[in-house]
Amino acid sequence: MIEGRRIWLTGASSGIGAHMAKELLQNGAHLALTARTLAPLVRLYERYPGQVLLVPGDLTDHAQVREIGMTIAQTWGALDTVILSAGTCEYVDVRQFDARVIERSVCTNLLANSYCIESALPLLRAGRTPHLVGVVSAITAAPQSRAQAFGAAKSGLRYLLASLRVDLAAEKIDVTLVSPGFIDTSPATHNEHSAQVHWPASKAASYICQQLQKRPREIVFPTRFLKVLNVLANLPKRLHMALTKRLSRRPDETSS
Ligand SMILES: NC(=O)c1ccc[n+]([C@@H]2O[C@H](COP(=O)([O-])OP(=O)(O)OC[C@H]3O[C@@H](n4cnc5c(N)ncnc54)[C@H](OP(=O)(O)O)[C@@H]3O)[C@@H](O)[C@H]2O)c1
Image 1: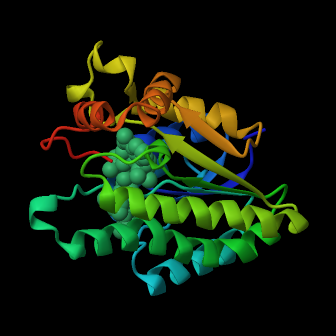
Image 2: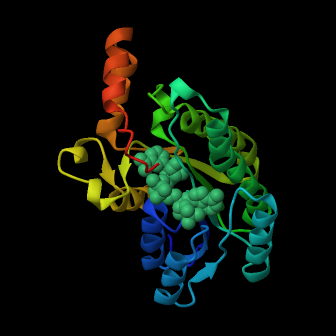
């Protein structure tokens, strides 16, 4: 039951997070929305009066995340669900390996989420049937070309959340991992061919919101993409390398 739940959603200004925000608001949830870009959050605030709490900010800034936690605490006093969807994807050029790319990815995809978890846990403890949800990635199942920074950070986040599940079970806080494959966040790049392995962000968001109600340990999609990954992982080394490169995003594709 989504109606009336107090949900903190990060990454709400675009892509999967923005679509999830709409879906959850349409179903009567109360949302605390975070991203650095304010305008899309304000549009939701105006469209769903009384349902949206604006808590914008840069999640890589620990102090800002603490402020956001305090604002939610003062306004709602508790959280029932936290959905950590904010993330970025930068590709690595191994010919000019730059450790700063890894650093930025770890900062946004791992450290920022740990700041959010620090602020969220006391609020979840005061919430109803608490649920902690983190968006990781299906690509951590097998190494992908140029995904060293993104994959390493998301693998760290996966471990962080999965091991939190072990300790939070005693407090009846459920933890769900969301593992998208490649999702088209730009309608311009979406086409029938890509839909075989890429879902549009709207479809991904609907699927996540529907599955979250069952509180699974993990929500993985699109299934076609995963089958491809599994086949790849078991191929002879040369074939695996060649096909993995074909499956990877082109250098001009930037969405996470
Ligand atoms: N799209 C895919 O194929 C795919 C695949 C696997 C996993 N994922 C994961 O799914 C999630 C959503 O992906 P998406 O493709 O929908 O991404 P997106 O459209 O790029 O949206 C990312 C969101 O994260 C927010 N964000 C990024 N850095 C932030 C920061 N420092 N502070 C606050 N907010 C920040 C962005 O808001 P601002 O820029 O306004 O701050 C935006 O709302 C991400 O965690 C991504 O890694 C996506």
